[in-house]
Image (tube, rainbow, N blue to C red; front, side, top):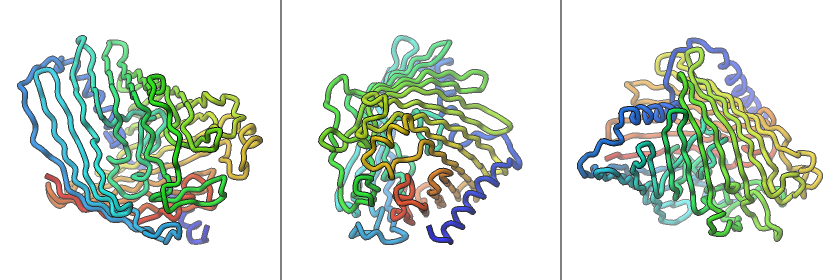
Length: 449
């Protein structure tokens, strides 16, 4: 890392540490509390028996937006002929239809991606919603599912994500990838239950070298310039479906949740016996707690991911089991100024066995990996202007990722976003530093209707 970059990294760390001293905490309902607020709202609706209210059949108007986005690397990556990270025109449409006892949601996108020179389309929502048994909601079809308490850190949220959107400047809504699933939500006096069945395994949209390069331990360097991963996927069998469970309850202002997952690793980080990238079986269980504290909102979360095909951690082809912990706190320091922090720890189980049996022990991650994150959000001009600064810093890998943007809403139709994704670190093989050449600046222009 260059001295100037080191200084900049140190400044970021000092900023994060310095901001840990609360100044003027006030009660807030911040961005991360949307989920808890939504669930509280859902419970209120149940208490009022609104789910029994039969309305006339009707359809909403078509809404959506047209958007153009462009992003370019801050420094050239010789592995790519095009240096753009984002260059696409997108149309998004959504609509819902209400019937007497059910409704249908639709949302879809059509876009031309000039970086990959392809036209693409995706149905993000197409699902049937209805209630039964007096206390149960069903949501069947294509949908976007999320839970957990982390802010851009996913512990018990093992639903599909788009990691290219994580780095290339697309709207945050596209960090989540749609899934074909059946979701059953039951409400009881003692607790609430969410069960999600995904009949066909849905992996993440992972970094495959086509848009961003990635570090290969076997090659000992970054690879990129084309889609370089052709993974072996689980067979389309009932037993290979994904099952996700959440038991949760709001108790005196605190949201308590237990989680379970049976499925596969969401990225092809393992290898098959013929050294083809693959998704190994992976189960997980965890818990979370979120509530008000000292004028702000705190969250705690933990998960244990089990590598069921190699519980001893001696097989170099299978990614070892992991435990992850997260603690976070958010408060409003001044009017329109919200600040949040997260401390994240990840432990690789059977680390000594991993290193002893690894094909490339010099590139294996440390037994523990620690991150600090900080988000600063400031709104002004009657909330038309929004500054959003999200920063990652790894205490163990000594790399960082600054995910900063400014957005301005001119009126109900036009809005503009400008952002920077700055990534750097000391070593080429660490989690964020491998994407140093993916650092970019971008803008988006959106017309909503």
